[in-house]
Each structure stands twice: as structure tokens, then as C-alpha cells.
Image (tube, rainbow, N blue to C red; front, side, top):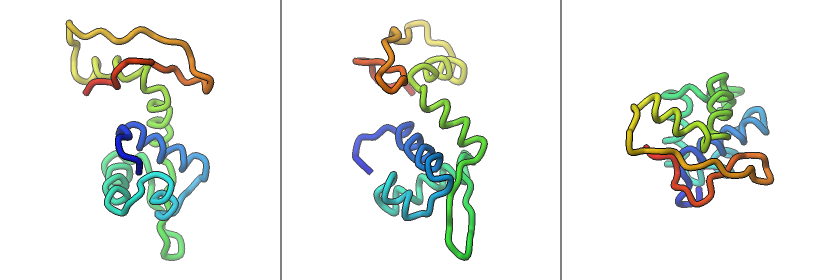
Length: 123
């Protein structure tokens, strides 16, 4: 896993891989998304047990992972995180009078809105 990737990006990468493959083995997730056993176990703990965005399947003694309905929804939200993070923060955390979201920018070539020069969504 490359250093410096944001948590939303790691989650989106995992859900995108599961979307492309339908289901993935631990080794596929290890190689393509997480990069080491510690990250793999930590993130699968979140995705499977805590968030229920991914389901663990046991087929012939091998573990596979697939997206749940929550995972599909979470992927949709994360794909457009730059547009939804500020309203969600305001809804979940509360309104901060001195805070204003950055201006909208044009769409990138992929069709995903970008906010160039703006910091990531505040926590």
C-alpha cells in the first residue's frame, strides 16, 4: 500500500476491486490494495465486522470477499467524496460558522468532480 493514501481512497480502492472482480481472495486484496498483512487484517476488520461493507465467504476452506449492499452505497458515496464530505460533516458533526466549503471546480476527464488546490475533507 503506497504511503500517504487517504482512508477514503483505500476504502474506495478495495470496493472498486471487489466491484471489478465480483469476489476477491485475501491474496488479491493483499497484492492490489493493502500491501501487507497488518494493513489487510486491520482493514478487513473494519470493512467486514465494523462497517459491514464487505462480506467474508468461505468456499472450500478458502476465504473470499465480496461487497454487500452497504459496500455498494459506500462506494457510490466515496466516488464523489469531494461533493458529499462537507454536507455529511455538517450533518454528522454540526455546523461550524467559520467553515465554508471550497468552490466547485470543473469535472476531470473521468467525470469525477475534483477540487484542485483544496485540502481533503476536514475531520
